[in-house]
Length: 380
Image (tube, rainbow, N blue to C red; front, side):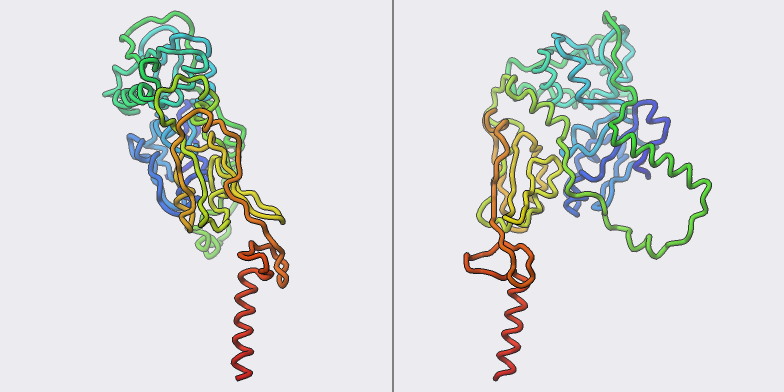
């Protein structure tokens, strides 16, 4: 098992890149999300509270796990959702070839049709007005090592029709051996973000160096760190599929009264622990803290409704709500909660007082109560 793909998969565009720091399971320290593993046709992903393990020998690079992850943990070196939308700009009809397609001529080549979800098709539909997507290669699905995408494509079409009714873009099975005019635009070629490139290059350099070095034995220290995730839990990054849909949300002919976003509010039980804002992977919820106070803000357009905030909250204070119109989606970031802080008169650390007259933080207040109890015992 390895999270790092080998060089052959990188150059073929089928390298699955894993950004563990955004994973809901690692941030919540519990196995609460299994979406990517459920989407995998070959069981190449193994999830725990501490890691995402990839069986690189089993992984076919289909990319089905990409749109399934609500936190944007997974990327494919041979596919960029944003570039896909840009390539289709101003095209009324688009011819999309999967890697198994044998049809001739032009169109856009992607690793597998399962990298296309309803959000991505809707973004392309709004951006360039592409209303017909001819899908090439589906006739080879039953024998394809990447899995059968026919049922998946049907589900995407149903989702589009739920959102847009009769105006929904159409996913059409292209006739086999059709010839399309124009050149092919390959989206299944190697491409990496700067972050992933530097990470991959660093691992490659480290592996090369270890061939010339003799490792020293540090078994006790290594064992002490096993099972403890040490990544950044406060790093936040917008999920690309949701972001692309959000950028075009006002241009789309929605017919449903419930859009694919969920809003959040905090009830009075909130203790201002800030966990929800610190660990939200997309930045929809953000923790704001200063000497003056603590707060949680929310920007609905970034929310993928991953559910981590409700899972983490010890007070059950996070309340999700459906979003019924575009104005709610594009609403600016707002404060959901703010608590003023004081400086503890004893330890000088900031704390949130429960009453206006309170001057000690909870720790110092408990210590003071113990001291008073001991003095009372000694005096009696």
